[in-house]
Amino acid sequence: MPIPRSSLTIVLGLLLAARSPVAQVPSAPDTLTLDALYEQVRRTNPSLPAADASARAVRARAASAGVLADPQLQVGWMNYMLPSLAPMPTLGMTQLQVMQMIPVAGQLGIARDVADAKASAMGSRADAAWWEVRMRAAELFHMLYQTEGRLGVMRETLQLLADIRRSAEAMYRVGDGRQTDVLRAQVEIARMAEDTLTMHAEAEGIRARLNALLDRHPDSPVGAPRLVAVPHGPPTVERLVARAAESRPMIAAAAAETEAAERMSVLARRELYPDLQLGVQFGQREGERMGSLMIGASLPLFARRRQYREREAADAMRAMAAAEETMVRAETFGAIGVARAELERARRLQLLYRTTILPQAEATVASARAAYRGGQVDFMTLLESQMAVNAFRQELLTLQADEGRAWAELEMLVGTELTREGSTP
Image 1 (spheres, one colour):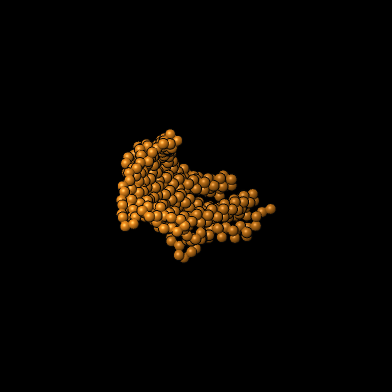
Image 2: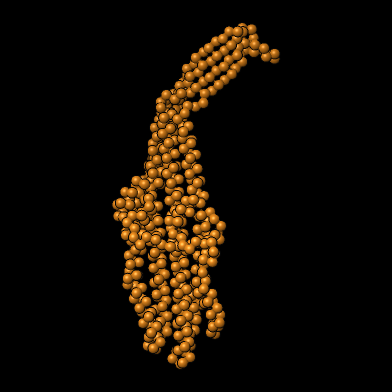
């Protein structure tokens, strides 16, 4: 049974006139660039202040790591009679005592080094949080660009399919065409309408995720993504690896954790040294005042079960931190190679699509349309040619999004911006 033409006309008109909800909101910005999105994310994303606050808390605790332990104050009443609680003659005494523990093997300085290294690691992780959020923003930006671009291609394809359907109907009315051509055109229009509606829903979901990243209401307006200048080409792998080793926050955090573990291992060995205890005592009895000076030391009698075990644990933690630093470096350098290869693939394929594939496919469609009107080719040849152009244009949009995502990933892996170097439209 043929699909009612009136229904197809209504659906087609709605889809061709449709704009995303973003464009229907008067307050929505016209366009959205990636740099503008980065600025908004830095201002509004809640995970960034949380990471900074965590780093500040660790730095604040590090300031007290090298301070002596609090002294102990004791007040005593000696030789008081019970139950009257009166001091015994000649023996009753009131005492005041102050004791201070003093490490003598440099433990305080080493503990401060450990705390400073951990604070440095947390600060680097806070910096890494920005690059990770930035990467998520770039991912959503290019997903939205790809989705809206595909919607535009689908709308144009719907218009062309409508033209093809009208040509098929005109040829059928004069006896030069077949009814199956008209029906097939209607089916393709309906299928394309279904794909367009699905793509609309996908774009809505991406906008909601982008607004969540910006800590905004899911229905807040988002401008249409617009790509801007990009570099001539990515730096070499050697340059990227060298820059990542210098500036990637995750590598800096891993190195700081290794330094902290190494200092912890030294500190565990210093715990075998006895700690010095100094104290003064003041006493008063029947008008007489007395003073005492006390010197003591801790005795590591259970060193084999305590200090030696702590030393083994510290050595294991040092080995683990060193292995994790090596792993972070290896994963970073490997990911740089993968991202750069993906970037090169996307750039080269874009050039191939723009200079060869798309021009030839569009020329094939133009030739097929003219030949179809003259009855030289069948309808399926025309339809397949047009759908091939549609697929090629959507693939070009995918390659553009892949290139943008690869640039953002490289910047995250390197820890610096790359798209400012030698940029050209």
